[in-house]
Image (cartoon, protein in one colour):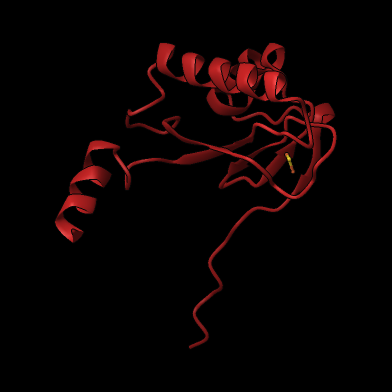
Length: 125
Ligand code: FES
């Protein structure tokens, strides 16, 4: 079992990503149609730009989820390691998000409603 999981991780390039994008596809923060359309656009754009199942500083792992506990103003998207929380991420915003946030590393301030960069606690010794 463990070997199967390790093989899967290798095939998904887990261990080589620099970013992880979580997109909530509803149904409470947005309609299921809005969520599905945004997810399809995110998936298609990442693939088209060779950022999915890829390596390099802009390579992204993506996960669709069904709740990030905000439950309004969605689709809600969070990107790590920056920890920027984006609201209203309908399909029409995905292209700019990838261009500006993922490729240029410049947050789109007017769409961000919270920040929570993740860092490991420093070693106490
Ligand atoms: S349903 Fe999207 S944040 Fe809860």
